[in-house]
Length: 276
Image (tube, rainbow, N blue to C red; front, side, top):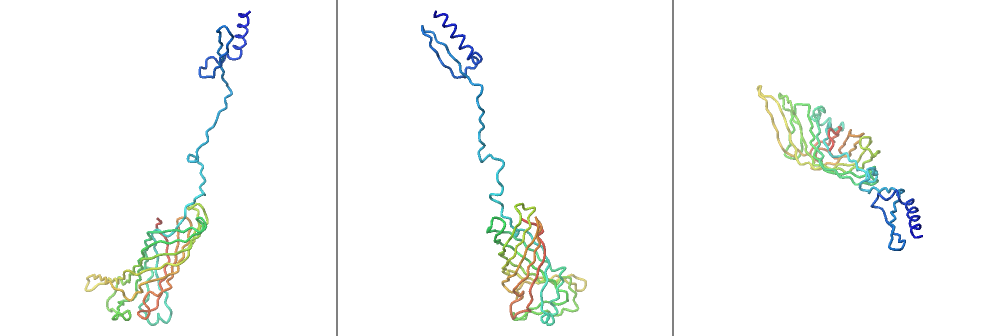
């Protein structure tokens, strides 16, 4: 009787677990039939659900790029422009030597530091920094600028000399404060505009001349203050699209000190030839 029960049990359990015997890694259950006889039931499930590990945030390749957008700025770089002088009719009549050749009156700026203070993400902010500017004013007439005892500056005739170069060069260290607006999150598609003021300190003034005497070329470079104002303040605007930036600056302080030179106001237009 026991033998019959044993065979029936073996047949029954073999139907349940035969296909799983080859998997030693499966869970096992021991069944005692008495008389020291044990049957080992191997249990394995084919419907093990596949689990997908969640990708850590640090490895997520589809990060949100608009969480912390770049603050676009358009100050640092190299600016190249053309200078002229705004002169009233009265001052022009009294100082004919102030006739400027704009084609050779070049402005060169090296803006080395910029800092933006965001107000509305990268769309609106205050822009400041540090730059160096060299302004050249090329005079048309054969006149030489003379500082009369420090009291005033005038242009005196140097006839019969004909100058190939007759240039006043003024160097400034400048600090801007501009309100800047950007329209796009993509820099290459961004329309930008900035306006504000730029303060300057005149650290160097040079008067350069080049002319011929008896077929010999003479070059002259004389350093001095030439009664140029030690400080300047100009209203400035910058506008552009993508990497292209145009600028214009109009001085609201005279080039020369009050009562020590004619009342003239530099005006510069140009573009950024290289952005940092």
